[in-house]
Image (tube, rainbow, N blue to C red; front, side):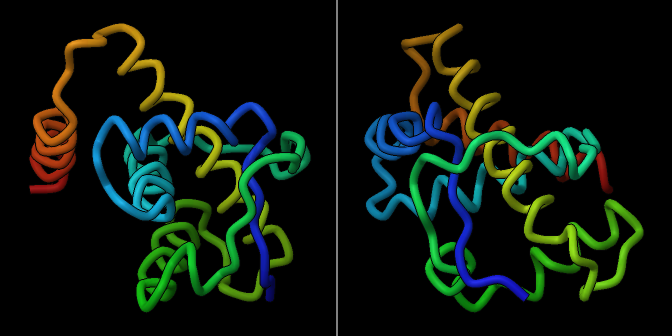
Length: 131
């Protein structure tokens, strides 16, 4: 079990910038979106390839709120692991960092992008892949 997750130092500013760009209020919202977006990409990480942890720190309750069981299920299913796997916190961290980075790249590539249009487009694409 874990109590804290930290982004990489590079992603400390990205969290704030994306939160402002999308006008999301609390920074944990973009973090939740980033984890989901990263998982949607179907990328798998090696737990030994973890980046630094010098960035934004989230407690488990702040990062996931009441949705922790859903995120836990998604990550465990993605990696075919049990919910007591020692690497589970690493996978959360790696998908958080990866998701923030790919969202930020999308924004850099298209600076005129409107936040909600971007998010709705990504949600629609994700839903179309599973339906």
